[in-house]
Length: 573
Image (cartoon, rainbow, N blue to C red; front, side, top):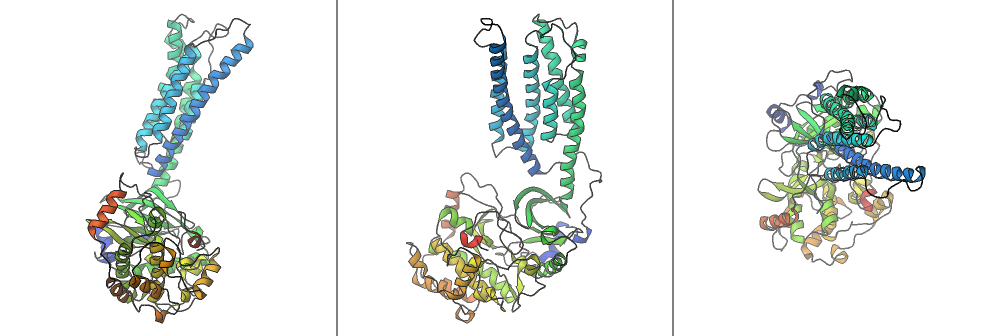
C-alpha cells in the first residue's frame, strides 16, 4: 500500500463556527500582522531547526559515511600498492597489519552508520548526535593510523592532518549547534595527540610529553575554531528558515509536498500543539508580488476563501485559517488528513467495488449540495481532490478538497478570475464538463458531470476518454459519447448505477441530475448490498500494517500542479 495524508488547498470550516470562530479558538494571528523576518533578525540560539532540514542533514550524514567507507578502502589499497612499488623487492611482507585492521573497523562502522540513517522511523536528531560520535571515531582511526609507524624522517613536526579536514567537512555538511561542534571538534582534534602518545608508549618515537604532542597538532585545533564559525553560519541559516516559516500562531515544520506554484508544510499550533497543514502560494509563481496578475490573484483569493469558509459540511475539509502575508504569499491552514485520495486508491489497488463507490459518492454529494445551495461551484472535482480516511471511529470518511477555488454560480471565466491570473484553465480536462471547457456559464451540474467522471474512474480504473493532449481530451468531452462502464471492466456493475453514471455524463446540463441531493437519492435506490463500517474497517486494517506514514499531494488545480504521478489524461490538465 502506498498510503497518503492528502493535503490540498481547501478552505472551508466544519460545524465549529467558521473561520472567525476558529481564529478565536486557536489564537491565529491575522494575516495583516504576519511578516517574514529579514536576514538581520536576531535569532534565539535554542530555536530548533525545521524537521525537513534535519532529515535532509541525516541523509547527507549517511552519504558522507558511505563515501568515508569507500575512501578507507581506496586509501589502504593504494597504500599497499605504493609500498609494493616503492620498497625494495622482498622487503614488503604480504599479510594483514595494524593499519588494515584499523581501516576495516572504520569501514564497518561507516557502513553501519549509513544503513542506520536509511531507517525512516528514526528521529533525525538522534542520527545527527550519532554523527558526532562518528566524527570522533573517525578522528581516532586517523590518529592511530598516522602514528602507528615511525615518522619517515625520525622526527615529528607541526602538521595539518586529515582530522582537521574531516572536522571542517562535517561542520559544512551537517548542521550542528556551535557548542556541540566545539566540543566534538576538540575531542576529535585530541585523537591525533592520543595516537602519537600510543606510538610513544609502543616505543615508535620519543614524544617527550603530552604538551609536545598537542603543540605538534596545533593546526587541527585552529581548524576546529573555523569549524565552529561554519557551524554557526549553517545552523543560523536553518534558524532563519524556521523563523520565516512561522505564520500567525502556527509554526511550519517538515516540507510535505511541492507543486508548480506552491508548497505544503506540516504545521503545529504553538499553543495547542494541534497538527495542521499549511499550503503556501508564492507571489513569484504569479509573476512577482508587484505584478498585476499577482494583485488580481490576491484579491480573488480573499473573496473566494471567505466564501468557501462559510461551508460547514463534515465532508468538506476543515479550514483553520487563511490569509496573505506582507510579501503577498497566500496561505491556507487546514486539517492534516491521514489516508489516501481516490487517485492513489485506484492506482495502487485497482477499481473499487460498486457498493463502495456508492458509499463514497453519497458523501461527496453531501459536500457538493451545501456548496451548490450556497451558490458556489467547485469546478475541479477529480479523484485527487477527494480523500478517504478515518475520522474518529468512522472509516472511509470522505473529505472534498480544494474548495478554495470555487466560483459563483452562473459566472463565466473573466479576465479577473484567479485562473486567468495564474495563466491556467480551471479544472482538469479529464474531468471537465463541456460547458466549463467552453467557458460558458456553469452551475452545480458541472460538478455532477465531473463526479460522473470520478465514478467512472473508480468503477473501471480508466478515464472516461483517453487522449494524448489536453485539447484532444476537451474535444472528446465536447463531442464523443462515453462507452458504458460495464464494457470497460470485468467487475460487476449494477445497471441502475451505470445508468446514473451515464446520466451524470450527459453533454447537456439539463439531461443530468438537477442537484447533488437528487443524485444522492438516486444512488441510495441502487439495489446493492451496502458498504458497511465493518467492511471499511476490515479494508483499512488489512492495508494499514505497518501504519501508513503521511505523504502529501499538492493537487493539480488552478494554483498548483500535482507532485504525484497522474494518468495521461490527468497529466494533460
